[in-house]
Image (cartoon, rainbow, N blue to C red):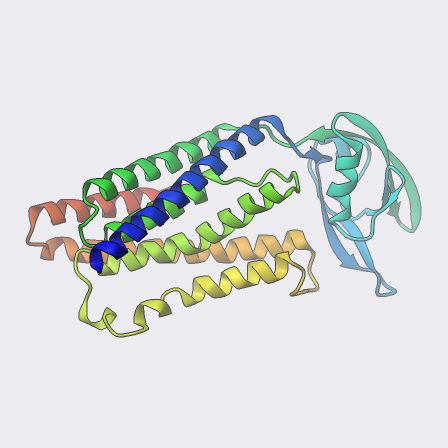
Length: 306
């Protein structure tokens, strides 16, 4: 029975790995070809005096196309290329219809006066070095996971370790382009799910490697570690699908959720590092002690880069 479970886990992980690698390759190719039209303005939703929503310029990057066209923070966007703008998500849709490096007319309201602005819509940032670094980190995670798993497939916690490496690969190599098609949505939600779950998987692994402590053998205790991640992921989904509505704009909601995620990630990785550091002096097996040190040092390096 145990051999059957091991074979099923191996087959499932193989399928998931192939799917993740294929998606990462296609996504990397799209990153190099597709860049979002951009005006250099951060648009947010704000209620007007009469209670209706208005799209307001929260920040205008100095030297950007919007700035050069005369748009300033506090301006209310009314139209882009003749299209009415009611909510912030209307802006990227309108810019996609316009395309990059084309001049289009914005109508903004400033001091209750409608003002036209001729904006040359630019492209978002190209694939930069930081993104290449993330892809390199993701590939390293995957190669380490494959090496450990298929070399010691029957070893305790090998599946757990590989799941951690696979989640880290997805987190590092899935990047939303803003193309707004079905594949891009898969990439986005894959990145969100991996980002939320990977820190919890890491802490859980630190607690159970090399041996599961007695208090974690109780039914349901391990599942409790995943409750905060599951709740945060549920909020991401509810907000992203428009089921949970808040007064703030999508930009500000995403900013807040990302700050919460970063806090969760930092706390869990630091907690895992502490657990590993406490286990090193008590490891009798030299190989296990070395493995604990490798993971502890890697976690410390990762925490410093946050």
